[in-house]
Amino acid sequence: MILAIKTYTNYGTVMESIRTVNARATSVQNEMDYAQNFQKKYLASDYGYLFLAHDNSMVFKWEEIILFKYSWDVVESWFNVDLTHIPYRPTEEEQRKNMDPKKAWKLYFSDVWSKIK
Image (tube, rainbow, N blue to C red; front, side, top):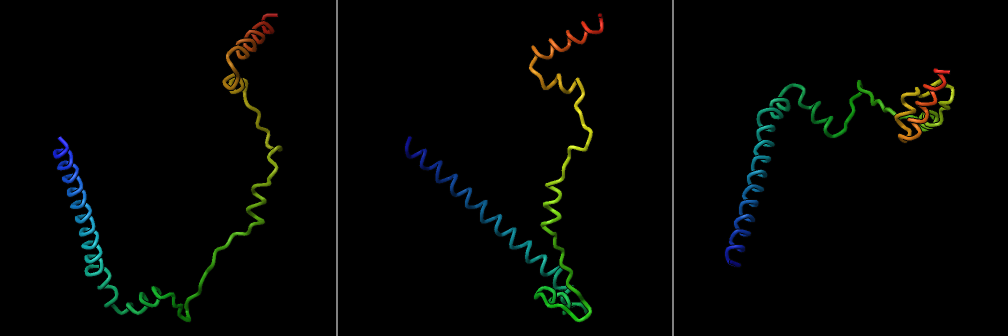
């Protein structure tokens, strides 16, 4: 029984190792295909030096770096906006949904009773 369990465990380990090696081989093959079929054509073109320069973070004289920043003052002002001026008031139906059932029934019967009077 113990021998069968060890054999099954070893089999599972071997199968997992095979799957891992196959996944790595596929990943390497995909990278090589990308380099051969896509990247190599662009680097061999007339604009290849531009691609290499941009990979090395070089900026040419006709290019500009645009830096997008956000101001903490603007961000904090959005979080500190006073929302009390917005006239939102939940409807009676929304209020009843948020109440416990006994209070909702009492409110309902008081509304009905006030309409009857």
